[in-house]
Image (cartoon, rainbow, N blue to C red; front, side, top):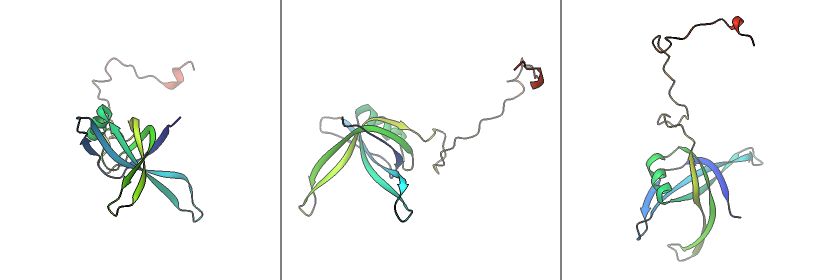
Length: 139
């Protein structure tokens, strides 16, 4: 079984392309922190290139941006390519099956991850409710 689950932050804005047959692919890279520090006490980060296809790619392109936190479930794919210097290189990419947006929709552009506070209820919203004392409750 080839399945990988990652949670990380986008390192740059997603790039959208189309294949010659018109299929959309959205590509982005996420930074994933390792759970444990190395011998020097430093946390290490791994970078994964994610490819989201078709409707999932369209959705990712529309709502994701640099710094946003996502969870990705997909397949790990090895590909080889020829570099500009003529050497053959290998790359590991993730073909996304699912992408869940973890940064709240109302988060500010600084990427703090917190949503705006809710407005307080007005007296009109509370009409018809009776204020009770907690000593009156049977439990």
